Length: 187
Length: 171
Image 1 (cartoon, rainbow over the protein chains, first blue to last red):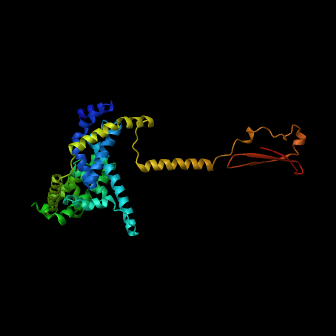
Image 2 (cartoon, one colour):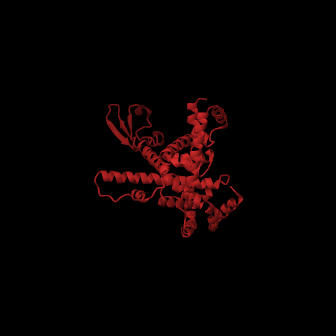
Image 3 (cartoon, rainbow over the protein chains, first blue to last red):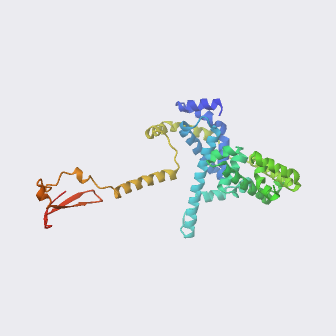
């Protein structure tokens, strides 16, 4: 973490809330991109990123200054995205159960949003990955954290990161062969 | 190292994510195996193009108004959250399952303490029964029975004479 970040954190903690904006502005894009790649939904991503910044502000007093501030923000955003995906899964399951029973339920918001969303090819390829594989692939290969940083952000071991990364890259490779032959051929 | 083993490690090798010892072993194999080398290069190329495409794709961005509103919201939360922090002796971000487990454990402890509460104060803490007579000769003729409630710890002592006739009781 650089000195400016340390100074800004100290200022926020001493009650100067206006120092929070310059502290997090360099990460506004990366956090939103991370949230989007993990949730695969623009609206969800926006909400996840907002909640991550609000939580970061509230928890700043507990931030360990020896850590990387960027990775700490990534950790909060990844946790938030995971919670949101779990909630969405529960809502979808409840909606599908209601639909099976013939109950005239209002469509789950996620289901409608998913239909409306025009998924990019990249997002479709990421869909092929499991939750942990996607988290690991996005953090290591797209956000370019190293293995140890990725493990720390996700709160798991480096071995777990390697196992999931290996299987994620294998699946991405298959998706490239199947859906993006131009990427494989370099066209 | 065999080709089969190397192919298992290839996704990690492609991103230079193997440890130094394994990397050395793998490189030794690859330098002597054109088929593995070709496969590794193809994988590297494909992944690198995918990453480049992913980075180029349009991801959502904040509008200035939205970003400013978020910062104002964060700053506005200071006082409220600060009060909460002080009230709880520090802000603790617990996952919901942890909070639920802690609450469950607390309820369990309360229930167990009610169900398995030990007996109340022992007989030694009670005053001597009135019929534990000063006269030692007569005392030998007295029999007492003590009932202790496991639920409430309440004790009742019944006294009988040598013919087992009821002589009285004391709580």
